[in-house]
Length: 527
Image 1 (spheres, rainbow, N blue to C red):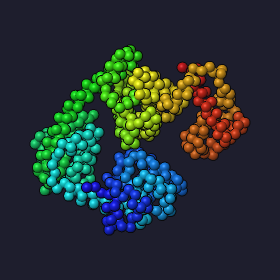
Image 2: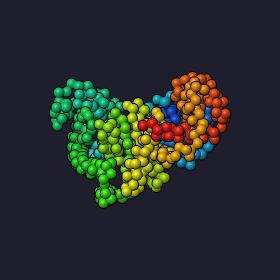
Image 3: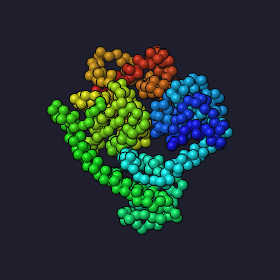
């Protein structure tokens, strides 16, 4: 049994909530409740959530609500609750019609309601249903499959799945008894205290069953390979027989994990040999065909090559691996990656395989979204870049994919200073001009700016580039670390100096093209 919007709206405490979309989508399942007030927060949703917002992200433009709604559809959100009166006076009719078209419920939440008023009532209903379902718990083969699949993604997902299936308090901890995370259920806080005073954990794991009040605590090592410190899962229940069943389940998971790790090690060796072949340029067409036969290609497999340049290439790689698991990317295709690292050169080559749920256009859209997310996720990492060629459905194009990744890195370093991600899809027009004859290209305006610094007393090229790329004074001034009024003065001076109208988009488009080409030509002259 599941919690639906109809069930939620029938509760006495929530009867003042109103479905502005009528009966549309009220039979949808609600898996969780989240609060969002930032435009890009949808990227980190799993799907199935009831999202609540006070419409701060809409501001004074109700049209932005339609865009936000489309993003929620894309990640599989269950429904949307909107609190009127603060930032949004009325929910636009166009938004309501769009929601009805997608069978998506929109719930109007009264202004006086606090978020916990809704959240606490939902979880009371949710856990009361789970309690009724799990009065008699047995570990079935289907449960093992679900837990195994979740555990291969990560310990947090493993704990979430156990909570979903069995509704028992659980915690993930390290071998120094430090609690890494809990599932937040009542009783989970008892686990830390019980293990702190235990002399069994982690030395005698096979006999580890602790008693805390009326609860039994079972501790099992997370049976999947992890980099760094070992992780353990502690599960608490009132049923001793359930503890035994959990231990049996984890033994089966460990056996499955060992077999899969052995298979993965063999597979990694095959991929490493293939990657070293195309990196060196010595692989033959026969070897390509042989490798192609070794991988499962029941559906179309798109292959890509990425280059990582960083002092910590593995940190960038692990960030990339987490990005690949995001819900909006997984909806368009499942991706896997394999890495060959050259620590001495502070670089790594990554081979990416995408099983896209669609055609070539879907693959292109997936790559665009991937780079958008990677640019965001790499913020705060040690300085590093990631560059990628096009995704190709033909494995024979692997050399082109590798060359394009190299070309994207070379061009991106010149043209996209300060950026982390370089895509050949975006930079390919400049690749054709890398070896062009400078005499055939008119760069007169930029050359004037570059040669006559005395006439301006500041770097005219960098100033103009930032102004055009940032599409406004405020962001450009922040990028250049100068006051906005200073930038306005400099742009006016450049406009007068070049006798050009910099408010004309055709003029600014021509100028930014000249600046990029000028940088390309300049990089050829200076080794």
